[in-house]
Length: 403
View 1 (cartoon, rainbow, N blue to C red):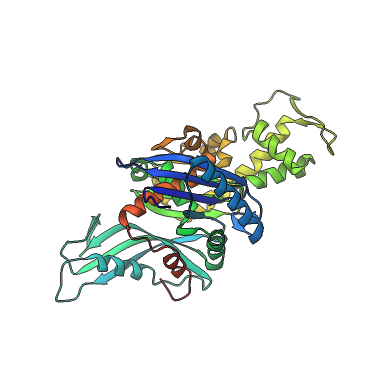
View 2: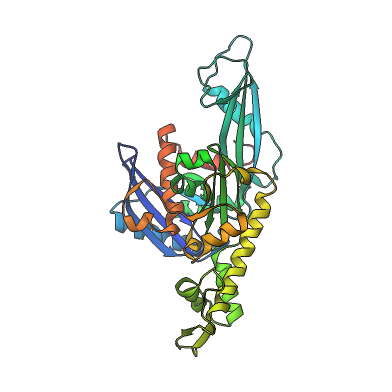
């Protein structure tokens, strides 16, 4: 892409490949120029399991995006997910040499490295080190310590890591096309860039991004990321439950879930049914609506309860003043926000991408939150990092011994 104002977000989802082309405007806003999509094959629970098939699907989505935006795509920001993604909080600390007392950019880099000096599984690689707060000589709440005087710089980071080879497979899949990978971003972090405002992050918010194969989450308190991760459960599991429970083909189960399903129980008339018309190889069937809703309800409840148990391992959920923001394809399920409120006992709402212009249908579609969020992430990163070092930099993060 010759124009540095153009950015592309690519999400290799379990159900769908999404490619969003955006343009950064001088006033800081982003305009969506085009969206490319293709059905996802060769991907399970957010991870590539059939390299060649997944690569073809990504190519289809990229070509679709190029045609719709009239842009030649050469590089992308790519989202990664999967239950292998883990995170923790840690503090780094550096002391300035005796002959210097002004904090500079190298000290910032050194304190980040210090925070990463912890043991993570040998097969894992660091994905993000997200600053929470700086401390200079014990003074808290420092936003930018560069230029300040002090002897000891400390910094709290939220650190996200995942299995190196799984991240590498995603990068290789794109490189083979061939496209350049500008950066690799955890999907929930990307979604939060467009789903939440800065004020909502400051007041405390939990983003739950429910896709086809995974449920990714990220929690903010006082404007900083405190918890994040991914569960290997998503909309495909609901579809599978419907297929097994009602003994209907997966394709029919998916259509039934989307068009007729609800998370809410007890809203149906006694004996109310949904008629599935006969089709080639399918004799047709009459489905009890409450049975359908019960199957959906139980799986979503189980997913939320699993997430709540994970979040309850720390206390940050108690400081989420703005509540829960649900996005991703599963957020389209009727009543999902009410069930989230019941289980987490805090307000929940459906969330879409904000602060965008261009294709209205794109940012109103929760399935595109991650891909659009990748563009917003790119916009912030490019402002801080004008020099593009491309794949060499990206691959170095996922090679043992290199940072």
